[in-house]
Length: 437
Ligand code: HEM
Figure 1 (cartoon, rainbow, N blue to C red):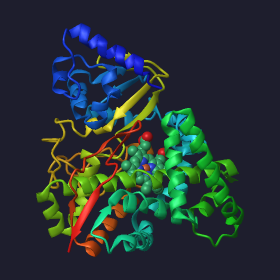
Figure 2 (figure 1 turned 90 degrees about the vertical axis):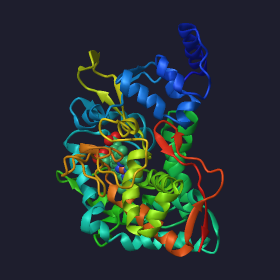
Figure 3 (figure 1 turned 45 degrees about the vertical axis):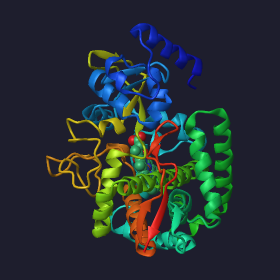
């Protein structure tokens, strides 16, 4: 945990070193100053991390954060290397996060075991097979929209974006029951990853409730006629062996939290980006198919997840420093997306970027058009997000349906953009939206 006293001490050090007081809330003075680890844990950083990221990319492309005890990389190419080189950068960091709440899963493995487990479910979440879920997404979105379709003002996050992904993933898993209760389980399980003992306890309780709920579904999985994902995972064989009961529940738990969280943040951030600029809003209202571009540019400019951590498995040299085996490195993709050597005018939300691979993501991040680069909002390479197409469909279809039912949206007064939540989420907490027909 970050020690407040230590942060205060670091800020004092800054005053002494530079003989000037850091004006709270103003980051432009960072240009003149050395970056301190405490800058990465300040309130200012959470509200507006872009200035710190710029400083890191320019002056400290490899930065040692002595509060978090880890290295940070922020340039596009370096983040790409960390995501792509699975032999040097291991995802076993997840043993300390998701592993502590749902149990060990494929996300923390880099071996053949990862590949075979991933292949049990991944094909169902892309292409033609994913299309079979369109009806489900539309039904879940419609259920929610009906509850607020007679209103002219809505709380987008509370009434829609935080619930839709949970309803969809729980239905895909084959769970039946109270969607709002499922939502609280997802939230508590995700909060349990933060590193706080107290929150981990709550996360474990939510996971226990989730496991009890799916236990009867595991019992009946052998029949063969069930097509839900709990049954598919329970029936799957790896080298002639079924997964253990613990492995099956952990696998389902991973899909439940990965599918239930993050998409909500992507939807809310997308609405913020579209509605906070009237030209963009009008363009999207004029041509509803632009929601798709809005989703991609949102994943670049305001990605729901801004960083992923890895353990270094062998000594690695970067910018003249050696990162030792066993050390932790943070690939800050949020900063990489604002790298001006890759994306022109990177702070601008631009629906028609000529340098971004728009539309559907791919695992390599490389676009067929050599002038366009992919975003890393769904990761890259081996651990590339399984639900990337599902998330896009939920966001785009859901948004189109709201507009169709409620009319022309605009932001209510006083709405604010995304801020950093926990360690690695970047999200609009709530968005009040008014509609006129
Ligand atoms: C906008 C929404 C989403 C975002 C921003 C997101 C982000 C990510 C990222 C960054 C990774 C890579 C993690 C790493 O390399 O350390 C990942 C992996 C993963 N995501 Fe997503 N995700 C989203 C939606 C979903 C959905 C809807 C599902 C449900 C199927 C899902 C399931 C997974 C799983 C299972 C993995 C682990 C894949 C592996 O280790 O091979 N995600 N996601």
